[in-house]
Image 1: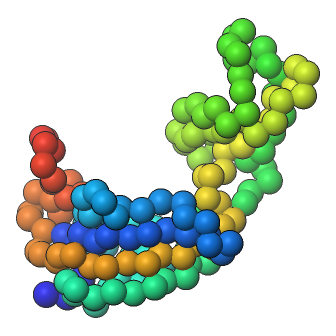
Image 2: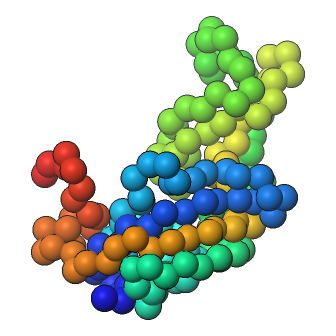
Length: 158
């Protein structure tokens, strides 16, 4: 069966950046399972998987615009350390916050005295991503999975 919209797809992947640094991998664990056509994975990878079938292997290079987007300097700002209510803040800490596009994650990227630089961009925004992929399985999604917009894996209850 080929990957089309409303199919349940499982695949193994290794993700690297353009420097060859491994950023993530499913090797040694369960494959990633998603509902094709529902926007559950980045658009560039979803487009590359369209039409593939179990056993297919591919290497995909994805531009930032089709991954996590370009870096948006408007999502970087300097705030007062007082906003963190006396917490011991450190570079790299992440928080859920209401940002201009809704709920998101901000990351502390710099601390200078009482000034804290926060960044609302996705950590991989602006990155060219390289995926080494092996499609493990493709099956029709169930009506419930299509209605809910994601695959119901082990332990999923609705």
